[in-house]
Amino acid sequence: TLCEICGDKNRDKSKLMIVSRDIDLETVEKSGSYNGTYFVLGGSIPILDKNPENQIRLKRLVAFLDKKNYEKENLSEIILGLNANPAGEHTAEFLKNTLSPFASKHNIKISTLGRGLSTGTELEYSDSETIKNALKNRA
Image 1 (cartoon, rainbow, N blue to C red):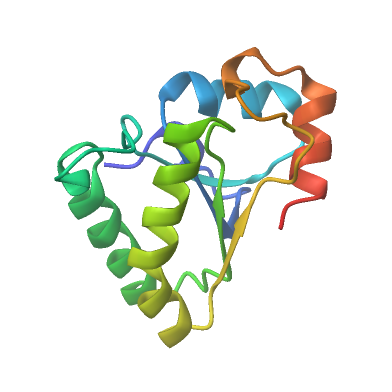
Image 2 (cartoon, rainbow, N blue to C red):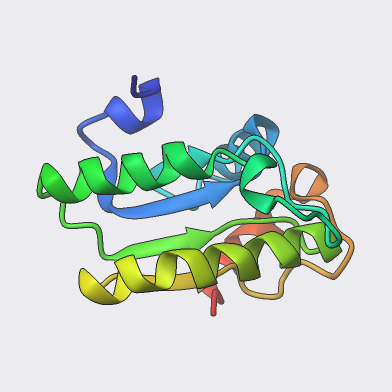
C-alpha cells in the first residue's frame, strides 16, 4: 500500500528517492526541497555482508518499480538518498548495479545526492539547507 506522501496526487511521480529509513524520509520532507515520491529500504548493507539482498527490501523495491512502470507513471529518475558513510556508499553501489538494467531499459536516470553531505554524515542529522544543496547538486 502507498503511504500518504506517495498517494498524494500533487507529488512528482517522475522522481523516486530511495532512503534507508523512515527518519531519512522525514528529514528530507522537513527540508521542503523535494516533491517526488519515496521508497524506504529498511536499512543499509554492511560492507562485508554475504547476502546483501537480505538486508534491505530489494524484492519489494523491484516489485514497486515494475508496478510504477506498468502503471505508466513515467518514472524518469531514481535518486539514491543514502547516508554518506561506508554502509550507505556500499548500498548505493549495490543498488546502482542491481537497478542499472531496469533503468537502462526504461530510460531512467540513477543519481545520488550531491556532496553537501560529508562522508560519515547520517541523513537524519542534516539541516534543511544541507539537504537542499545535496538535492540540487546530486550526481
